[in-house]
Length: 335
Ligand code: GLV
Ligand code: MG
Image 1 (tube, protein in one colour):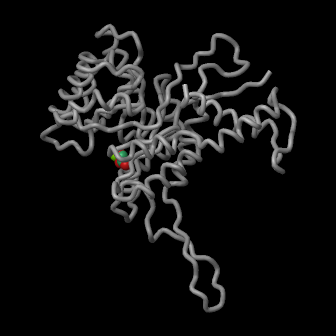
Image 2: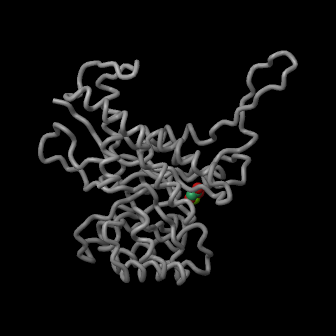
Image 3: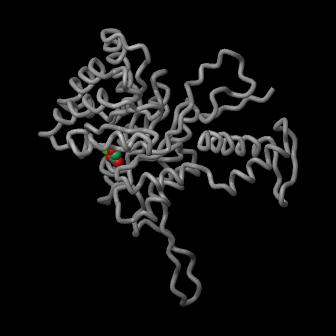
């Protein structure tokens, strides 16, 4: 019997019952909202139908003197809205901050039953996850919350990258992980001033060819970390995500960064500006041509074994599994 793991289908094929997969949902974009701004909170009802995940941000980008207003605004927006199938997340302040203890205790006790996931920034190792895990268990018990709140780590310190595998397996509450390229750049001492994306000076030169000007190829600064994160997450059965892209004036570069991470295995990304929602939706949904070809592979190999040729390309058990990922995602997008 074939075993097959997918984040896009509720049950693994051939898995023995009961197989405790969580309910499946699209998480193509985690849309960031600053909850201290009333105008933004008022937009939540329209936003619910446009995004897969709404996140109330309490951490970086919220001024220190607005931290408590942001927390209160988040609790209000959580309690005032029916989110339907759209997930509700919050990004709390980091564990070194003076705000985090109240972020966790106020939010879990006052709107914990509306909350799906807590995003924890600047995670350095599994001990950070253990701390939050225990606190959540105590607060959930106190507040009578039935559905465990999940934890999503941001991979954005050099120490965190070193410990990525241990972080991924730190708790059954682990939902997934996102790359935090801005903090990670600072933590690594990179010589950049950007939020994600490439850098024009990070390049390789093609070999010299006489006196002809040498071709320069810009490289992806984030390839190594995304690959490391995807492997750690998939091996642990949790979900990998790209993070923020800060240059709102460059949608083409944003799309390219999102697409690289999608092709590498990420399930979604953050959207910090409304213009990025449609980019994320299109990038993290498979292309019609890819779906058509993937479906042909599944049809050509009904039991997922053996080898066939399609358009001159060999297909076998491994390409069947790749095709299944694309088809399952396509089914979820159109359902
Ligand atoms: C996100 O938090 C980042 O630092 O990039
Ligand atoms: Mg950060």
